[in-house]
Image: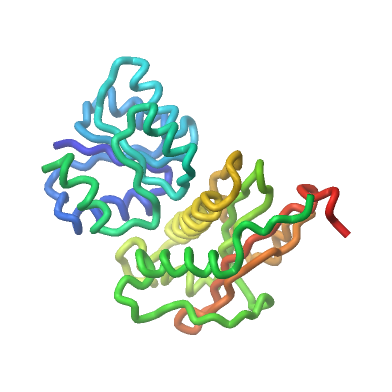
Length: 120
Length: 161
């Protein structure tokens, strides 16, 4: 499976990659985007199977990326890995069609719990 | 309307502990030891602003050595291999994580900014029109680290003084 990790922080992308490996999902094809616009473009050009997106990013926020993808008819599996989590954000994410909402700081156990059903 | 301090020092300390457990000290061998010294020095800092239902800043500040150690832990490299860009990224992410967790405890309707990183002491960037409402000050392997919250006074025109 191809997994796109979208986060404007290089450090956080690295941590997400490392945590995916620790949780046993390191053998998937991992690609990275450094802002919302890049994430949107890469979903179209790279056709990932799953997107792990930060919420707060330059160019386009994660929720804007998701809404724009859905508006364009793209059904890629999409969820958030974010330091921000309020009930209204979770609600927005749910209603936009997000599959999961992982709050930073996160653990390999949390990744396993969320991604095992999705990635098998 | 009076200042509602929605996030107290214990809340902040709990968030900081989670960051240490998850990223900076996963083995549980080098925790942040509280000093309660709000005047302890810093050499670098990062901040996020929160605006809306609560307006102010969350600031992460430390020595360069502590920032290098944090970057080393985040990036799985030795502290002496860490460059300025690594330092900036890690400091920004630390402010972002704590700021995001703070925001989650505030009343709905707050916006979190992208982090600002300054490779200079916190004292060079006094946040105008703000007052410190809480902070966690400590030593991490002998190096100063602090996480503090600054509330904008303009947010509380009726209850001040």
